[in-house]
Each structure stands twice: as structure tokens, then as C-alpha cells.
Length: 578
DNA sequence: GCCGTTTTCGGCCCGACTGTTTTCAGTCG
Image 1 (tube, protein in one colour):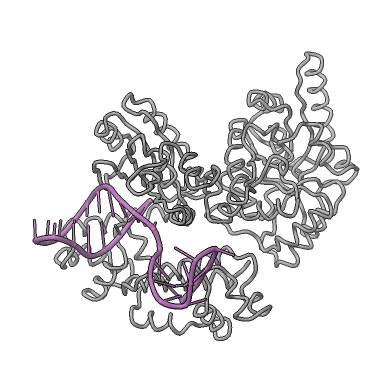
Image 2: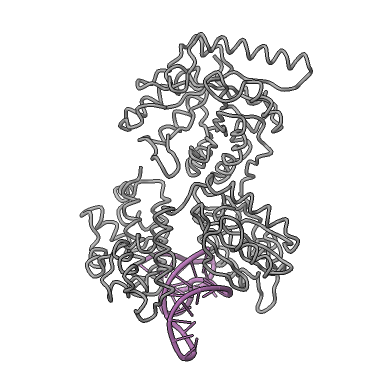
């Protein structure tokens, strides 16, 4: 992992906050932009520096003379003087304090100067003992909000996995949509961009009676606190630990508002700049030429007015999508409707909840033309993994099910696979002779996750070189917000996958989402094929496919990159011939 | 502090809401 990049990005972000406190104009954004670039950088920044010195650093967007010198200083001494000076002057735990809703750099500075508050604990103590309310510019309400902000922060720990939020949001979305006063409604923000973690939820509405919709919104079950309610915006905190905003916009501005509130912020800065370059003004109310509105009703109109094709929300992250749009190179993203089957499903053979037939029925109900049953194998005792003998029995059982479908004229196929284990030495826990009889083989790392990188790569490489192994499941082993990836070298993994024709999984479980979006993009660039799987242990979990598709779309994946977006015949050609 | 087929100087995205003021600063998105 690019450790130095993350370290320096963190420092630059902190610097931006210090500069905000000092009310220095424009520099904060410059530091933030540089931090963002470093985080997105493919290469370890120390390698960039070794390759071409400061000059090479200055080719990174947002890095110029001064910041390249600071990076150089950090690489040489492990410190940045300008940063140390700020820290000395204002020894604050900035990230912690900024996390409190309603606290920004200005208030933080006052709290430090007047009360010596430098971290969350001191802030809480001062609020409890009512030291904050009497300060000039503060008040009883501010003090109370700070306390509540701290409370929520403790409980929510910031962003939540999308899977924790989506089910609640779907219910609320439907309720709002059914209101007779609601003419149009959409999700916006990071949820519409399908980010893997969500800070808060944004709803955008066109309404006949604004007040009625607002009142209904703030009284929804699960609302714990109303942050605010005005003429066009209401903001609430939910018991589940996240915030929701509802905005009501005029119909003629709906598209512009949707574009604006979907973000990302970085994407919007670029679209606004493009508008300015064309002598236009883009705001959440529309695209304006002077005082005249020239677009705004739909998002497509807005993009068209500034000379761009429609850009899918999942791509709006300032990761080159504007450039691609300008040059007509936008990908045609894979969609849920393209998915033809699910290849990573567990049955009751390995302790799952449902039988093969029940899982197959669910697949048919989803409109799939096949399902792959891939139960755990014997190394995973805890999952009642199958041994060679059981696998061969299961093979016969599946043949029988397929024969049954044929007799009844049902055009559906059950493929027989397994999710085998990559042992520490890279061998598979099932004999090659049995693996060769299956339709396909998934292999995954389920043990010894803390191996050193070289060992782990040797292990995974050997597995991919196995002519029976077709798919690597959850290739980096991370759990969203819970467990880091194991040590690996992704470029190396891609090279081996390419050489051996091994497919990488995009595990759709919202708690895995492994591969990550940026890795998907790199795999696509290398021409490595991927498969979107739910890893369902019961039939209902097969519905999680949409999370995987969203993740794939965030990685710019197209239909041809995803093997289970192909017909069954075509799919079979991607498996290694053994 | 960065950036540039309009520029090496002069720009840098823009508006709503809250809580505190008594006309607006700070924060958020």
C-alpha cells in the first residue's frame, strides 16, 4: 500500500484546516486538492520522487513548486516544518474536533483560545459544565448541539456501510414517493453515487405542498432529532445513527439540483468551471446565460447545456470522467439487467439455509438462466466444508436436478463449482482430480490473513497458476470499515491473473465489496475479467447482487468485463479448459 | 498554493439555514 502517500495526504488535509482557521484565502483548497491527488495516485510518491525528483512530483495535479518541496522534505526528514509550526501554535486534534456537527475551523479556534480546548474530551467537559454558552458568538443552543454532536459521533463513528443504510432508506423512499404532494423524488449525494460507505442520506423532491412534505419527513418513524427545518430543507438524525436531508426544489430546477446534490464536490467544481468557460453559470437552480435559464429541468439537459454527455452518478468522482466525457470515451457501464446468473452461492450441503433446488428457484425468479453452487470445502470445518467424496455426491445430485429441468423443458442450468481454500503454501484443499470434474472452481484465502506480502503473493500466485482454479473470491480479504486488506501487490496479482486467465471476483456483499472500485478500474484496464457474485448463504442474499453491480459501475466496468453478464455459452469459455 | 490555446498575474463554485446577532458569520453540502 502506498503508505507515504496516505501520510502526506493526511498532513496536507490538516494543513488545510489550519489555514482555514487562520482564514487564509484559497490555500486550504490547494492543500486539499493536493491531498486528494496523493490519495488517488497509483504510484508510491517516494518512487515518483526517485524517478524524477521535484519535477516529477510537480506533474501530479495540484502539486506545484511549494508542495513538491514539502513532499521532498517529508521524504528526506520524515517531517514538514510548516506543519510542525502550525501544530506548535495550535496543538489541536483537528480531525476529531472537525467531526463534531456544527463545529468548523473558526469556532474551534475560539474554543482553543478562550478555553484551551484541544480535543473531544475537553470539548465534552466544557459543554457539560456550561463553559461554552457564555462565549461571544456561542449560546445555549450551540452548546447543546455540540453535546449531541459528540454523542452521535461516539455512536456512529462517522460513515456507515451502504448495506446498513440502504434497507431503511428504501422504505422511507417509498413512503415519500407515495405522498400525493410529492411529484418527483430521487436520492442524491454519496448514496446515489453508490459509495461503499455513506455519511448522510439526501432526498431531493419536487412537491406541490412543500410544508406538508417537510412535516411528514421530520415526523418519520426513526427520527431522533431534527437538526433544522426551513423553507426548502429539512435535516434529521435517525436512531440508526445517520443523518438525512430532504430538499424541495422547483420543478424547473430539478435536474440542476439533482446534478448539484449528487456531487461529488470535486466533480461539481469541474462542471461549474466548464460552465464558466462557456460563459454560463451553473448552480443548483440551473444553467444560466446572464439572467436567463437555459437548462435545469433534467440532469441530461444540464450536462448537454455545458457540452457534456450524461455522466452516470457512480462515475462522478473526479477520476477522469469529465475528460472521458469531453472526448466521447465514457464507458457504457454494466447494469443489473445485464446479469445472467450468480456463481457464488452456498447450499445446505455446507450448512447454508436452503437446498440447491430452492437456490435455483430464486435464481429463476431473478430472471437468471443459471446458478453456480459453490459450497465451502473441507479445510473450513466451521462452515461444514465438503470433502472430495461429498463433492462427487453433490455432482451427481446436481446432474439429477439438471436432468429434471430438461425433462420439464425448463431452460435453466445449475453449474457445479466449489469455494475451495488456498492453503498457506498456495495449494488447494481439494485434490486436482476432483476439482477437474467440476464445472468451475473458486478459490479464496480464508486463513492466515496476516501473512507478509511476499508470502501472500506467492500463495495466491500458485493458486492462480493451478489449471483447475478459475476464480479468486474476495481477492483482497478486506471487510468494509472493519478489517483491512491483507498484504498484497495488486499489480502483481493482475499480471498473474492475466497470464493464467484467472477471473477476479467482485464480492457483492455490502460488508465485503471486494474488489474495491479503484481495483476494478485497474483490472479492467489490464483486460482481466471479473465476476460479480453475492456469496449468498441463503436465497434472500442473492438480492445483494445490486451492491456488486454498483461497485463494478464505480470501477467503470462494462458488460464485456463481467463474465456473468454474458450468455451461459460465452461464460463457459472463460473457464480454464482442463 | 496552483494554474494557464483567453492569462506567468489574477483568478480560484455557490447558496441555504442556524444561531447569534441587530445585519451577519459560520457551517454545511
